[in-house]
Amino acid sequence: MAGTLAACGSSDGGQGSGDSKTVTLVSHNSWAASKGVIAAFEKQSGYKVNVLEDGDAGQAVNKAILTKDNPQGDVFFGVDNTLLSRALDNGLFQPYEAKGSDRIAPEYRADQEQHRVTPVDTGDICVNYDKKYFADHELDPPRSFDDLVKPEYKNLLVTENASTSSPGLGFLLGTAAKYGDGGWEGYWKKLKANGVKVVDGWEQAYNEEFSGSAGGKKAKGDRPLVVSYASSPPVEVVYTDPKPSSAPTGVAQGTCFRQVEYAGLLSNAKNTEGGKAFLDFLISERFQEDMPLNMYVYPVREGAEVPPEFVKYGPQAKDPETMDPAKIADRRDQWVKSWTSLVLK
Image (cartoon, rainbow, N blue to C red):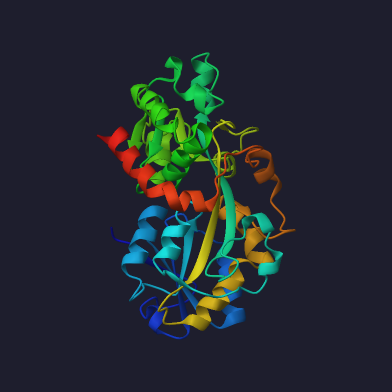
């Protein structure tokens, strides 16, 4: 899988993290920040920022682990609570307690003894639905995991591969949290029998297969249900001109799993000081308040303001499924192996 190197700011992009004046961020493909906010960091810190986007989160984490002895950059962003133990167990990060860490809400903090990662954002992985499809078919949209296996929703859902995609893995963990060790496999057998479609990553699922997104409409996607985020509906409002009075997509609130994304200073990073400055920046009030309408996630910094349209169209799930990180670490790989055997073969 090839990543693309893109310069954010006036860097020449050619020297990478070997240049002490350049800090290189390695991320999944959903990284986004306002040019003005990046420019302010560059001016204040004296570092130029390069961003290396490296596929879906699961792929990006795996590649970062494989290249940890000679990393592609200085900071990695986008490892979430579903994959965190894999990154930590493989020595992906070196310790650094970012300035402002005390302002991060306690429920999002992790690895508090060693500070190898810094929480950056949170969101809920949930099934989204195409409102028009369900109105046209005079069918109520699903509200829960249980609903998704009902015959009226046959051949309607697309999800991501749990072994390569963080939302796909989050959806699997949500079902494991809901139905337990003894029940999640039976649930997925029913979901498979009900015609669930599995694709490699979120971009394909949401922007190609899902009939409710702007991209999916252009691609003539025919699946009105997709595993995405509770914060996806605002995207369909903010980027539409003229703006609709309500979001064209909705969220099945009974299908959500709480996700937290982290960043860390890569082991063997060539520009550790630049990396530390960038981690400080990621939890600064300015970046945290810029983030919602760029990456469509919620800030983790206490007191950070969230734009009103984000609150209106993409509220956080009221009662998402959650799972202890230790349990994820203990069971994840076996669950993914079993899921792959069950669903993909």
